Image (cartoon, rainbow, N blue to C red; front, side, top):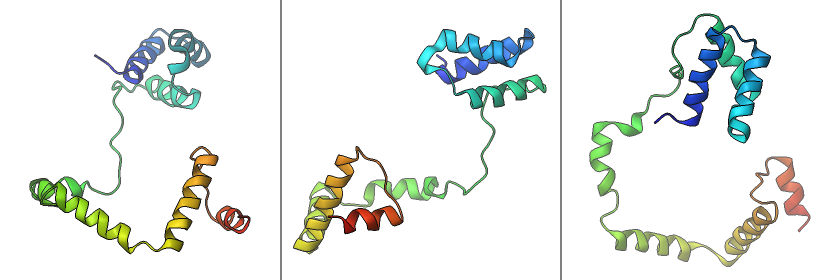
Length: 134
Protein backbone atom coordinates (compact mmCIF):
# COMPACT_ATOMS: atom_id res chain seq x y z
CA UNK A 1 0.00 0.00 0.00
CA UNK A 2 1.38 3.40 -0.99
CA UNK A 3 1.58 6.20 1.50
CA UNK A 4 -0.63 9.21 0.80
CA UNK A 5 2.41 11.25 -0.25
CA UNK A 6 3.65 8.59 -2.67
CA UNK A 7 0.15 8.19 -4.06
CA UNK A 8 -0.03 11.92 -4.74
CA UNK A 9 3.36 11.86 -6.46
CA UNK A 10 2.24 9.02 -8.74
CA UNK A 11 -1.00 10.86 -9.53
CA UNK A 12 0.91 14.08 -10.22
CA UNK A 13 3.20 12.23 -12.61
CA UNK A 14 0.10 10.89 -14.38
CA UNK A 15 -1.41 14.40 -14.63
CA UNK A 16 1.84 15.76 -16.11
CA UNK A 17 1.81 12.99 -18.71
CA UNK A 18 -1.79 13.95 -19.55
CA UNK A 19 -0.56 17.48 -20.29
CA UNK A 20 -2.30 19.23 -17.40
CA UNK A 21 -0.95 22.59 -16.26
CA UNK A 22 0.43 23.05 -12.76
CA UNK A 23 -2.68 24.97 -11.69
CA UNK A 24 -5.00 22.24 -12.97
CA UNK A 25 -2.95 19.46 -11.42
CA UNK A 26 -2.70 21.23 -8.05
CA UNK A 27 -6.46 21.89 -8.02
CA UNK A 28 -7.18 18.23 -8.80
CA UNK A 29 -4.91 17.02 -6.01
CA UNK A 30 -6.58 19.41 -3.56
CA UNK A 31 -10.00 18.21 -4.63
CA UNK A 32 -9.10 14.56 -4.13
CA UNK A 33 -6.90 14.76 -1.02
CA UNK A 34 -8.32 17.80 0.78
CA UNK A 35 -6.39 18.50 3.99
CA UNK A 36 -3.89 15.74 3.26
CA UNK A 37 -2.79 17.37 0.01
CA UNK A 38 0.90 18.16 -0.40
CA UNK A 39 1.91 21.79 0.03
CA UNK A 40 1.76 23.91 -3.12
CA UNK A 41 5.54 24.39 -3.21
CA UNK A 42 6.12 20.64 -2.93
CA UNK A 43 3.62 19.98 -5.71
CA UNK A 44 5.33 22.63 -7.86
CA UNK A 45 8.79 21.09 -7.32
CA UNK A 46 7.53 17.62 -8.23
CA UNK A 47 5.52 18.97 -11.18
CA UNK A 48 8.62 20.71 -12.55
CA UNK A 49 10.74 17.56 -12.20
CA UNK A 50 8.17 15.40 -13.97
CA UNK A 51 7.76 18.02 -16.69
CA UNK A 52 11.55 17.92 -17.25
CA UNK A 53 11.38 14.16 -17.79
CA UNK A 54 11.99 12.66 -14.37
CA UNK A 55 10.48 9.19 -14.09
CA UNK A 56 10.98 8.17 -10.46
CA UNK A 57 8.61 9.25 -7.70
CA UNK A 58 11.15 8.43 -4.97
CA UNK A 59 13.01 11.10 -3.00
CA UNK A 60 16.51 12.06 -4.07
CA UNK A 61 19.33 10.74 -1.89
CA UNK A 62 20.22 13.32 0.72
CA UNK A 63 23.79 14.40 1.26
CA UNK A 64 25.01 14.82 4.77
CA UNK A 65 26.53 12.98 7.62
CA UNK A 66 26.72 9.21 7.28
CA UNK A 67 24.57 7.15 9.57
CA UNK A 68 27.44 6.04 11.78
CA UNK A 69 25.09 5.25 14.63
CA UNK A 70 23.71 2.28 12.69
CA UNK A 71 26.90 0.33 12.11
CA UNK A 72 26.85 -3.40 12.80
CA UNK A 73 29.19 -2.89 15.73
CA UNK A 74 26.90 -0.28 17.31
CA UNK A 75 23.80 -2.37 16.74
CA UNK A 76 25.39 -5.27 18.67
CA UNK A 77 26.09 -3.06 21.70
CA UNK A 78 22.73 -1.26 21.60
CA UNK A 79 21.09 -3.63 24.06
CA UNK A 80 24.05 -3.63 26.44
CA UNK A 81 24.21 0.07 27.16
CA UNK A 82 22.42 -0.54 30.47
CA UNK A 83 22.57 -3.89 32.16
CA UNK A 84 18.98 -3.83 33.36
CA UNK A 85 15.95 -1.73 34.12
CA UNK A 86 17.30 -1.40 37.66
CA UNK A 87 20.47 0.20 36.26
CA UNK A 88 18.38 2.75 34.37
CA UNK A 89 16.36 3.52 37.50
CA UNK A 90 19.54 3.90 39.53
CA UNK A 91 21.05 6.32 36.99
CA UNK A 92 17.81 8.37 36.90
CA UNK A 93 17.73 8.50 40.70
CA UNK A 94 21.37 9.62 40.79
CA UNK A 95 20.69 12.46 38.33
CA UNK A 96 17.56 13.58 40.22
CA UNK A 97 19.40 13.53 43.56
CA UNK A 98 22.10 15.80 42.12
CA UNK A 99 19.47 18.34 41.10
CA UNK A 100 19.42 21.26 43.53
CA UNK A 101 16.22 22.92 44.74
CA UNK A 102 17.05 26.02 42.65
CA UNK A 103 17.71 23.86 39.61
CA UNK A 104 14.42 22.04 40.14
CA UNK A 105 12.50 25.32 40.43
CA UNK A 106 14.15 26.62 37.24
CA UNK A 107 13.24 23.40 35.41
CA UNK A 108 9.67 23.56 36.75
CA UNK A 109 9.35 27.22 35.66
CA UNK A 110 10.57 26.37 32.15
CA UNK A 111 8.12 23.49 31.88
CA UNK A 112 5.25 25.76 32.93
CA UNK A 113 6.26 28.39 30.33
CA UNK A 114 6.46 25.70 27.69
CA UNK A 115 3.01 24.42 28.70
CA UNK A 116 1.55 27.94 28.68
CA UNK A 117 2.91 28.54 25.17
CA UNK A 118 1.66 25.11 24.05
CA UNK A 119 5.17 23.85 23.34
CA UNK A 120 6.30 26.86 21.31
CA UNK A 121 10.08 26.97 21.17
CA UNK A 122 11.63 30.15 22.54
CA UNK A 123 15.14 31.03 21.52
CA UNK A 124 17.81 33.68 21.96
CA UNK A 125 16.78 37.10 23.30
CA UNK A 126 13.19 35.99 23.89
CA UNK A 127 14.39 33.56 26.55
CA UNK A 128 16.14 36.31 28.48
CA UNK A 129 13.06 38.51 28.20
CA UNK A 130 10.73 35.76 29.40
CA UNK A 131 13.03 34.74 32.25
CA UNK A 132 13.50 38.37 33.27
CA UNK A 133 9.72 38.92 33.48
CA UNK A 134 9.11 36.16 36.01
